[in-house]
Length: 121
Image 1 (cartoon, helix red, strand yellow):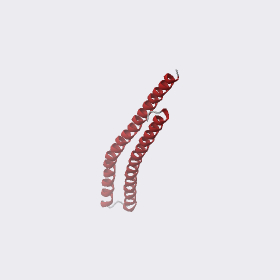
Image 2 (image 1 turned 120 degrees about the horizontal axis):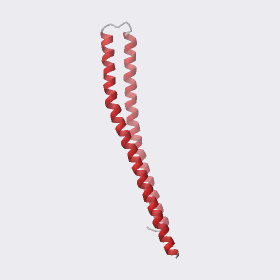
Image 3 (image 1 turned 45 degrees about the vertical axis):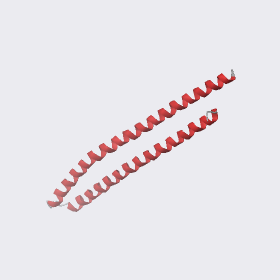
Image 4 (image 1 turned 135 degrees about the vertical axis):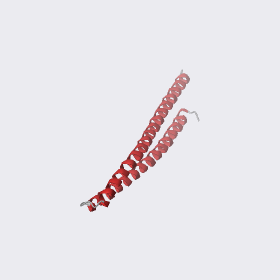
């Protein structure tokens, strides 16, 4: 009876652990994929919009607009903000990759400890 309970407990723990690791891994992968898609869309659409704004600013400045200095400042600010956004997207991408690797390592360790605990190793 004891060996049956041990075997059943070991199997159910192993199944529970495998399902949770699989589910967590899938969720983590989905998050990375969704952010990658968001980053790609933001970069392409944003680049087009920033290019249009720069072109309008350049035309206004070259036409001798009375607020050319203010327009030039705004143009510089927009370009700086765009560069900051791209840097933040890159940083977030790196953080998600590092987080995934840490998550994977943690779950591998958890699985190893569970195997040691139930005597599978």
